[in-house]
Image 1: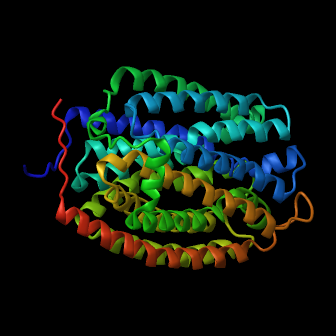
Image 2: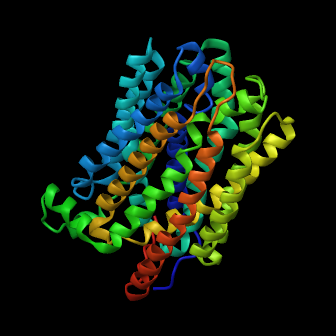
Image 3: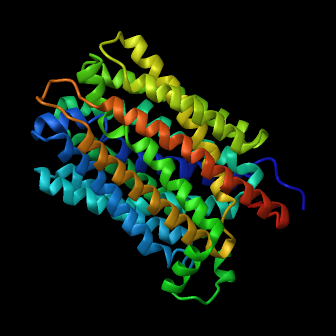
Length: 417
């Protein structure tokens, strides 16, 4: 059968559902960074305490993914998606109602337990329903949730936070999440093809089997490094912009919105490019680009807004040029019977590595008073840049092994309904 080069109507529906679902999950996590300065000042937190608030989600998400990995290929993926998405909505509601720091930490842990698995389920669905030749475009559209969260979610969330307090953005996400849960229930068909390939292993055996495969371990290591490089800078980005570059709280939504508009427009283009050129080459070029602007970004001082926005856009150009091709490469790694487990473990390692990076960043960064500049943020830039370059080496190995697997057993899946 020839490879499909266009999407069927149902595939377009699936892409839209997964993209908007990803938008809500990404927004829930991403909104913590722009809310950072507000939370630090309203709750009188130290950088280390705020780093824990961010990493608590990541650690719980990582542990949840490991626990779910053994069962991920034994159930209909639609049912799993609905179960974990419902829990994610409940956890986000608890965040919106949290009255103090300890309860916020507890709520972030609950949200992470459920939210951390959703991305891996979505990737498994993508791998089941789309041929590799289409996955770059699919991942480009799904990752638009990242840009959309900045164009729409984060600016609106910050606006609500400035009006009604930091709780408001979480309640906004709950409302959107309830709508998406209803659409998934009604529009997404069951995804059960993998059930016919059940190996008969129990959950623990399935988990051990997935870890035992060398190709998978290379992918897991690359994912961990991929996450650490980005998470080092993200938690304190808003605090850095406010206290070090002179951006005001009123200007922050505009900074994120302009950067997000660029991300929203660029993601599909990067996805199409990833399907036309070598995915690893695009990843490597994006990594070098990201390293250059990570160093420039973390060394900014008081600057005009246009300069801050320009550097933000150029930094995100590098990040996106890594994100889309790397995710497309990862989808080619697991065999069908292992996809759910692989994606769950991969997501878990991503979250845990991000949690470690966030906690580490909270220890490195110092702020002596509420309004004083952050110190040692430039150190995070150098550390992050080194990790990004190391990740290129690992991703080269992952890509080489994935290409060999695809050449030996090309996978073509077409949905006509």
